[in-house]
Length: 275
Image (cartoon, rainbow, N blue to C red; front, side):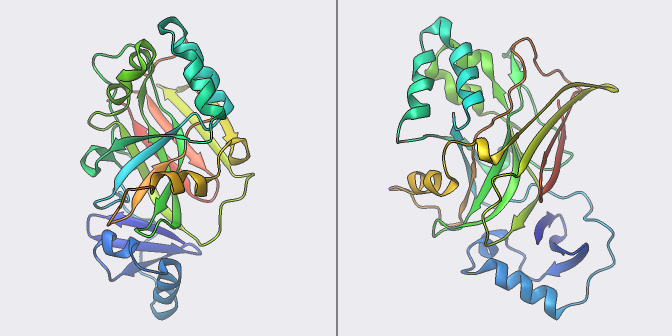
């Protein structure tokens, strides 16, 4: 089942049909002890609404913070080492890739997150900007993974490469994060063979395509959550981006007007123009 947040309320999709969710607060919904069973009961007790598809889904979050994990794929390790070699920081990424403790950093408050078909932004003071297609975990206040969505962790690689201490500036600005289109609510972990795909279009041409699989992720989602919840509380739950295994070549940078499409098996496609 996929949960969508719309301007007029919440919808759940099951087997191609859509059902209204009576709970209007996504915060309270995410906090329910067994959300999957609750949504199943709504589907079983109600007739589907007359809607061929959810119109203009909003970013599927309420008051949740968005956090991110770094260097969880070997490809990301190699890219971060290359971009930081001139500043002397390349070896740090190799160390964190092999360390027991993962790299976790704050990414966005809700007002900095956009949804499907909404524009993401590139920093005006950056010269090397890329999207980072990632599986995003939806986590309840108890620290349990209750669902999955698609995330775009927009990044300014030249700013991060100048100095590791510039990471917040390389990661956090208005519309620097996209989530959506909906949350796959399931009690089961996603299969390791689940594919993540990225396509960047400029005009009528695809200027970059790439893909990876969850099997390439070095760390387990549950381990990332365990570290995130150490000495931290999330009363409304949170989202965690799990890192990227798809990195465009070093001579590529996003431009205004590009279209970013990120697809994950079983969830759908998150599409965002670049402003």
